[in-house]
Image (tube, rainbow, N blue to C red; front, top):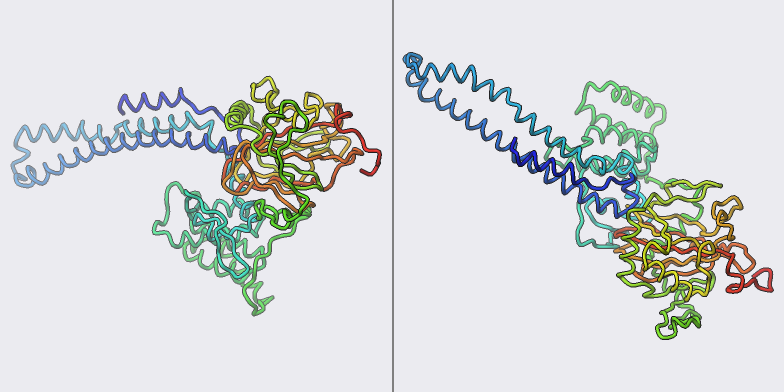
Length: 544
C-alpha cells in the first residue's frame, strides 16, 4: 500500500463531515451534506481501486513471467532444464520465496483495511436505517398526495393520469434518475414491514419488472434480488385478497429456489384456498387506497396540494385586492410593502418582497447548526410525528442583526407587539424528503398545551416568511377555506388565528403540502394574545 493512500485516508479521518443529529431525511440541508459525504467516499474508493489495480498488475506480471518460463525454457529443454544450476536455483527460489510472497501478501489486506478505515471516518455522518425508511415513506407520500403515476416516477418523471387515462407531466426536473429494481424493492419492503400492502404491491410490482428486465442477475451493492421481490410481492397480493396471483408468483419463485420449504407450504396453502373458494371470473382487481381515520380532511387537503396554489375561481372574488401598504408606520411611509389580500375569511395576507435574499441566507446560515427534528404538542409534552417532517431551530433577535431587523419589520406591518414573551422567538424550518405538515391549527386547542408556558395567552396571529423558493409543491393549504398559497420566495404570509373574542378560528386549519422538488425554508413568528390589548382590542360583539 502506498504512502499516498495512507495519507489520504488519514486526512479523511481528520476532516470528518460534522456528524448529523440523525434523521437526515427530515431536512434537505442534511441531504446536501450527505452528497459531500459520498463525494469523500468516492475519493477513498478510487484510491482503493488504484491500489488494487497496481497490486493485481504486479500479480499479472509475476504470472506472465512464470508462464513464459514454462512455455519456453521448461518446454523446450524439458529433459535438460533442471540440469542447469541457474534454472534450478531460480525455480527453487520462486517456489520457496516468491510464490509465498505473492500468495500470502498482506497488501490486499492493507488496502481493504485502508478502505474500511476511510469509510469509518465518515460513518458517523451516514444515514441510518430510519433515514432509509423515512425517505421511502416520503416517496410514497408524494405518490399519494400528488396522485403520481408510479411507472413514471420510477423512470424519473413526475406525472399524473388525466381523466382520459393520459400521462401528463406535472413537473419536469432538469436532472433526475431512474430507480433500480433494488430501489423499488426497498421502498416496497418498507411498506411491507408496515403492513401497508396497498403500497407494497405497487412498488414490488415495479421491482419484479425491473429485476426481470435486468441483464445482471445480482450486483454486490444490492439489498434485494428478484427472488426477494417475488417472495414479498406474493405475500402482499395474498394479503390484498389476490390469491391466484400470489400462487403464480410463488410458483415462479420456486423455479429459482425449488427447495424453499416455506414457499412450498405457501403454494399448498394458496392452492387449497382456491379450491375451497374458487375465484369469480371478473375484471382485474383494482387496488383501493385504505381510508384514514386520523385525517378526515385528506381528500380536500390533497386536492388543494395538487393545485399548487392555482385556484382561479377563488381569486375571482372582486373584493380581493393588491396595494402598497404602510400601516401608518413611519418606517414604511417611504417604502411601503406590497400587500396581496388572499382571503377575507379567514383573513390572509401575502406581503411580497418582505425580506431580501441576503437576509434570508443569513437567517438560514445562523439556524443550520441548531436545526433539530420538528415536534408538535402532545398534551403537556412535545413529540416527533410522521405527519410533520422537517427540522427547526429557534433564534433570538440577538443571534444575528437580520433577525432584529425582521422583528421590527413584522411589528411595523402588523402593528403588533412582537417582543418576547408577547411573541415567540423566530422559528426557522427546513423541510425534508417529501417534507410536510398535515392539517393543523397554529393556536392551542387544549388548555394543557405547552404554548401557555409563556404566560402570554394563545397564539393570536401567525407571520410566516418564505426564505426560499421550491421547484414544485410545498404550498400552504387552508383546508376549510378551500384555497392554497404557493411558495413565493422572500414573501410573508400573515393570518389571524383567533377571533376577537379569543376563540380559535376553525377556518385557519391549514397544512404545509409535501415538497415535491426543492429545498423549502420558512421562518415563523407566532404572536400571542397578551401585549396586544391596544393593538387588537376585543370587539363589543362577543361573537366576533
